[in-house]
Length: 299
Image 1 (cartoon, rainbow, N blue to C red):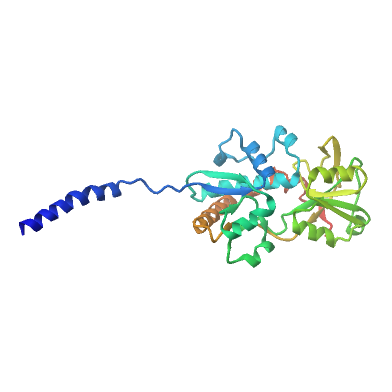
Image 2: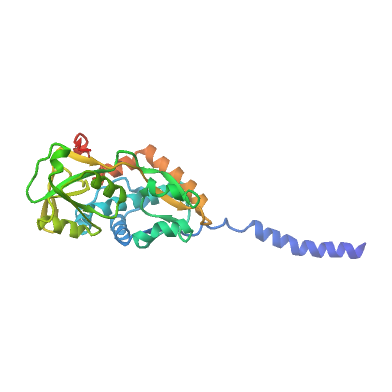
């Protein structure tokens, strides 16, 4: 009996400190949340947020210094999306460091789908996720139906178009990396359509006379001429194009942190939507400018 009591005391001497050490352990660290985004978007994001506390950003306008350095309106939209994504994750409860890493645009969807990456830093069209339901979580839309709009710009001289038949007389150029935009432009039956993944090339092509008009997202000065590459791009006043579809963030179902990150993102996006941050960001960045709110859709 005494021998058994001795063994019990020995067990307590070992077990109690061990138990206390477990109970006193700090809460499990969240670790790092890694977001993949194209290099130009990462560069724009860093410049936009430099010297600012990201969670406190309420003003989504691009300043003069930023605009002089980053002039691709497609990329600038994605920069604002990435800002909203990080804000939503923080607001939704994601702790620890959030790190933005560069990756080629074409590889991000594949990496997230395979579980090699947790989530993408820019939104994608809902249509691209429909065959991937088993591998992707899809967020609420960051750009809702009817919100993706394009303006028409001419190089130098202002032009006037009042209806679709008028637009169909012209040669059009635009960005090649946005499938729903391409689908829309191909359906318009314009005189000629040229696409490029290089915004500089698009502008040079139009200003050299190879195309008449550029289709691009609006900027903050949507109703005024836009200075780009020492060229003056004049908006076609009073008309715009509506791109069908919604855009969403994607999170991997196969990644260990996927489910937790998805629900955090959903909570954060809904809070941002209610607080008005998303609408303000799209308006202030120029994507949905107040100046074009009453312009007529050609399609």
